[in-house]
Length: 187
Image 1 (cartoon, helix red, strand yellow):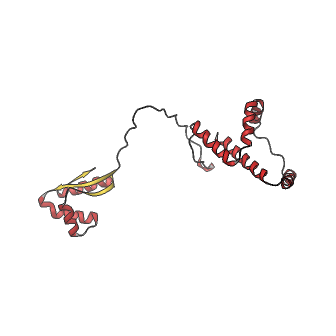
Image 2 (tube, rainbow, N blue to C red):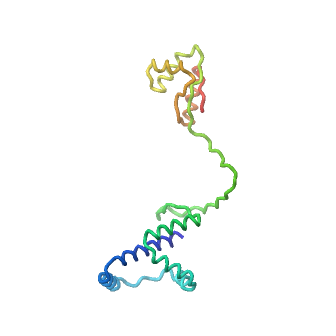
Image 3 (cartoon, rainbow, N blue to C red):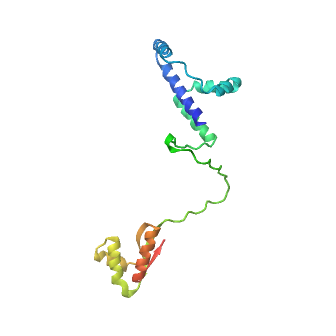
């Protein structure tokens, strides 16, 4: 379908260019192009035969041929919307063969399955009294704070340490602070 729409856009652009030029120039350009260019091979004979045998289709093709470029673009977007054709990026020839076609998506009222959470916020919940100096040093090295700021941070627990931490890194931080006597929660 997109090949047909692209071809229609090219034809309408060609028609728009030729209709804006002067009649004298158009005739000389046509004469030159006919003299120097051999007749194109008919590659789409089966399509031409089908279009000419059905007058309704022939009329639609003629109407599309008379559209300018903007109207053709609107037509293509309207057809894509109405026929539920997704915008797919054009693949190069080196990409290889395409995979199997995707199954049509059935719309039902079931809620989508929740994706597994990958980013977490780490919150220092509490700590053991005797491990306070160790926790302060660890927070200082993790967050890059000064010693005074690290002490204030630890004393103001519960407080969010870091936001948007990947799961693996968050688990390592939780284990490190747990070993020192701190309680860290992954939210």
